[in-house]
Image (cartoon, rainbow, N blue to C red; front, side):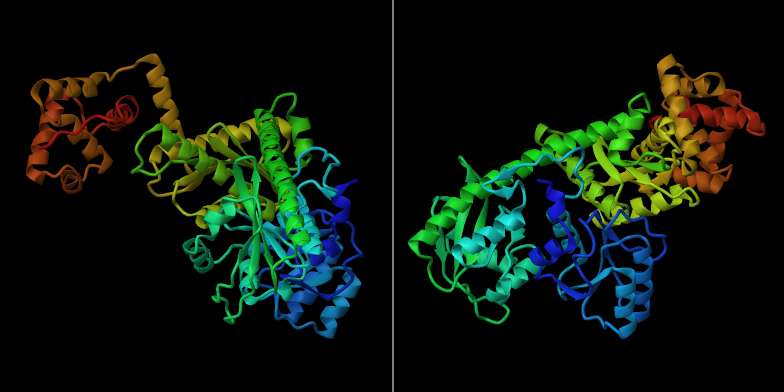
Length: 551
């Protein structure tokens, strides 16, 4: 059975009915949804077949009418807009003409939560051929179908949650529950005030200490002050707890339904393990494909084909994390940094998939690479830089991520060069240590990149300072003076004695004396531009980290 054949707009509306409502159109007109895309009003849409488009910020009837007609020309299946929305006769006519169903997102639900749920429901990001597999008669990993099956068995709406109280899936009939359940689903997370009270009552200790369902009395913390009891059961694989199932009930379950819920927990465990294993396999496969494509060898073309990125220009993003400056170096710290890198790589993959359905991202070593297809007639580097900056703004600065942007590669053969350019830009950002810019194209930092590469060459050859700089360095070592530091400050201040003296915290007259002294000791003519350039180059490349002495 092809699992994607079930994943049309009708299935989405059935499973996410608490969040989504059909406003106009026929959800069965299109085939299986080919991807979820966020509408960008400033870019020409690039959509997979039967895309579901999230119309963030779209609400005016004229905008809706025009967007529906545009999406119809690109074969979209549906357009989701925030409710309340006015379906005018013109909007309805545009939906009919375009064949694009108009869907409303309930107030209170965020676009990020909807995108994450759609991704989980539709299984976006599959690499390679999906195997036809079922567990307990339910398509493997289809937690929404499983939640609906459990709800039918025990005649109560249910949620499946992980250990962090995040809602992984929920059944239909949630309108039969209470306001607390609706709040949980809209937030895709059990509100902290509920989880805190449940923990204080010892419910979690009882829940995870037993393999039988546990009755939880109403908390009376809901939005309307009316809560239903819950019956919960832990989901575990052997001794490892994976999550839990929560049913909103009006009375305790009968013995038969209690047993059915306990049996269902074992089936949910199998699905969660299959999802976890599948995610690990997919992640490794995607990393292999991205790595092979970036190498630009004989297998690059095939890797791009499997990633869906062949025959179009591609921009390479290279992201690294600098780590927290106050973190102590330890095995635990290294493990935390590795986890943070993987988390950010996964976040980059999700972010890019919302920008373009054929983007790819994976962690290769300690660098996360993103492949972003761009139109031939646009400035791909600039657009990719905006995408990268937007991602960094979203994820915050906890791990201090930075991103280098390469030029567009026109084909598989050019991808290795594009990756090298992105790596060079990234290296400059890493060398800066998070001071200032967080995103850079190679064209922005080419001089800094060349300086770093010259340092590599000097280091490999074992070169040492020569001429006037060498004489000044030796004099400082023998007499504990500051002549090299003085020369460096004067050159960096373009000969401005006042600014240079302030940089090294000495009086301008003292600085002038040192300047005269260094010309005598080093034999350097500071009026000669070639001599100044030679000195600056040696100070930047041959001895870039010369120690500064106190005056």
